[in-house]
Length: 270
Image (cartoon, rainbow, N blue to C red; front, side):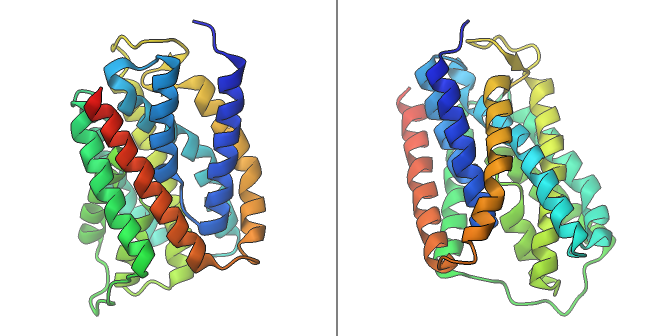
């Protein structure tokens, strides 16, 4: 099945948008990326009734590159709490891998409902700038493992890199905000890798409409989005110093929510 040149250009533009927003707001962009990928895949006539797992898998695969670059940048500044990341990583990997394998067998409508509900929570948090009160009890190894499993499982269904939940939990445990953000990048990398491998495994024997897939990962979109987002992220970071971040986060939250609802309606009506 040939790929129209126009779609390749759209994937480059989409990666540029997501990368710019990631650098500007410090978010993974899954709230925008997944709904738009669902629409693009539907227009191309690929994915069929598995279009949402394809979008989630492709989004997670694309995030591997940007999360790796972000982790390296934060680590160079000493802003990654590696003991916390190491304690959470086993739970993250298990949660993300297991959930992504199961997700490939679920009705897409159920996943879409979960995605929209979770994005509603993220949008409300961005709009009101809610932060949990700090806990006097430090994070223990068992607690970090369990929380990591929950974050990994949720992120495999929402493709948001775990940033929202990871930062909220770490600030709750009195981790300094800059280290919480840097550590969430490393956590997002673990989620992206584990989730991508899970979706590749679960989609390996599934017959999909279209070609150029590796499991549920649509390779042309992955390569183009990952490349352009990596190039665009530094420009977003520069503009972050010039523009009012609070207003931009609210706009991002509203746009993400609107696209998520549109995605749910399109899948439900289909």
